Image 1 (cartoon, helix red, strand yellow):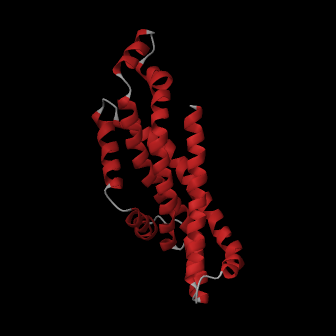
Image 2 (cartoon, rainbow, N blue to C red):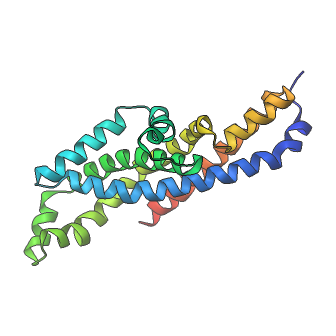
Image 3 (cartoon, rainbow, N blue to C red):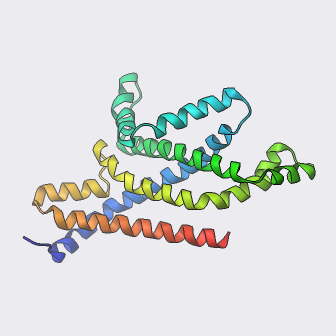
Length: 214
């Protein structure tokens, strides 16, 4: 039994319904992860150890463990200490926290790559350290962050397939459920792969346009 395009088209609406949930989850995780990651990345540059060390510990813990394990800890582990999250909330929390750790390192590296002369010039105009960072350093660093951020966001979208393991019926889980009922996985998995590819190409194109404008 070969690939049947008609069977794929018949189930495409159900796959797209799962894809919508994947997009919602990924967009929220990217937004939260970006905001939290930039904050953690800047804290990593702090001169105060009480701020810098906890941020370092968080980044190392998240980057040193698989996303799948983190999702299991949130969805299956937290209820043992009285914190119970639904599949969507658990998936969003895991993906956002994971994304933030990588964004933090991207932010730290980008800020540190700005020449020291830029700091000195900003301070010479009378700006405080914080204002120098906000108005002079970070805008330049953000331009350098876009390519690695694009790679991270693409990886995050692909990693969203892991949330199917905690009862989230997103794109991958939708394909699995249909395949288990019809015993025809090829068309569904190829279709899911094409949808993931389309989402990542759109994201890549959007980030490329943003980088060109900046």
